[in-house]
Length: 336
Image 1 (cartoon, helix red, strand yellow):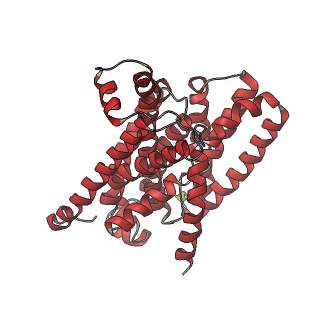
Image 2 (cartoon, helix red, strand yellow):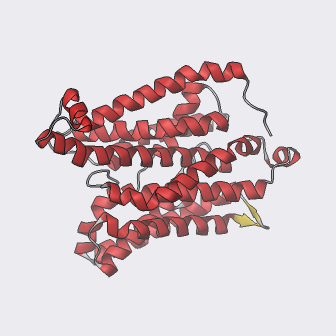
Image 3 (cartoon, helix red, strand yellow):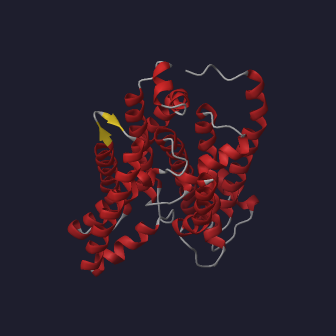
């Protein structure tokens, strides 16, 4: 296993982490201030401190504060999940979508809306979590060969599973206009109308996934050297891949259950950290994604609120729109 990070390298990266935290704080403040109705930052502070009341204070504390907190949690989960799944598969183009998590959650939610007539996110959050987890477990089962988890088969199995589930989801949505109306908002991926009560049920699984991902970071460094080298360093490759898959399931399923399928955050956050910190060390990469994931998600959400104000575009649409060119650039870079 890799030794502890040299003190000089740690000190060189501290300013970048501080800058990232400052940028995240700015995005959080803008998230509280901007929207269909802009609120001055001074009023935002007064509303948070309870020294002012009225319509603006209600908008800040009742609507935008829960939305911002949900974005922080979901962004952190997706960013870290992306770093772990790329480390486990040794594939820089991998993301939580690779395991079929988004498609599994979407299929479960649409089916629950169709069969049980659910209407609120708090009602179908557990269906989303269960569907995402089941899809990921099934994808890992397809990827097993002679008892070991094959990264290439994992990516292929997850992609095939995603296509099948998306087809089934479309069939259910077309079978009922009501299912289409209820589900299309969730399927686009959104932070709007997400109270903290939606986040509370998945906080334990989200926290467990973060702890597991941080604990796996040194082993993921060894895994990047190849299976033989990792085994020579004393790493049990199969166990690390299973544990990494579990961490991704806990994180991504929690995020998707709360905010719906959000594309590209899990793909983009690890690459942003790698470029800014000039490192692929997962002991730096995973904590960095705790900042980069929420930063990207908040920035996309803010852009969606102001680009066609007073209406707004859902954050899932913005992240997909911005992420598609990124995916093309990454694919070209990897192909070289």
